[in-house]
Length: 231
Image 1 (spheres, rainbow, N blue to C red):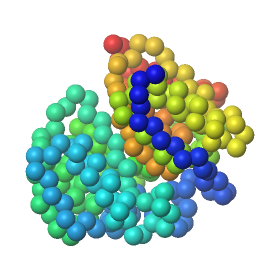
Image 2: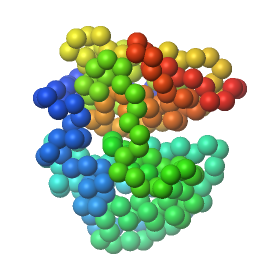
Image 3: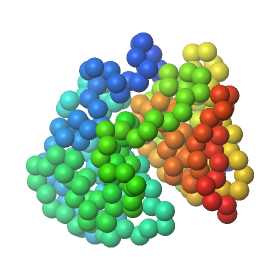
């Protein structure tokens, strides 16, 4: 297996609440975007990936509304589809993270969508850019009770990402069952880069499918990843 940047802290958020994000004392992604204030945001010809990486890291440092350290900040998922975004130059002071995100996506010619566990950035969306959450992914067994403290990939293949989720879901599942994932052949060789925190396994698989060009479905026994386009 190729070298991956993978990190998981072995812990579970199981307290009768299926999603830690939904707990009353945990702010939503939208609330964090509105409440986290950046004293300065400065970019000179930055790529969208560089800009979002900065916003992601600094949002954890500047998040004063989230109590649990492992839940601080906002995660971003970037889907390019072969698009080359324009470079970003900004010099801002005392702006909410939401406005910094808006300026970055506008300058780069991209759109963003606030979802339940991250912000998805892409060239275009069929629906309006800011629904409260995207359509929830399908749930197999107790997948939404298996919470990954962190999920990090850098240049992973779909097979490597699926194997990682499959193995770690068994470690994190109190019943040690985890989830089954079937990757159908014939998909593109897209590499997956992700950095997510405190995310249910079903949503992690949904982002892997989104970035790798696969359709995510479930048949009651496994998650199925079907290529949208052949190689």
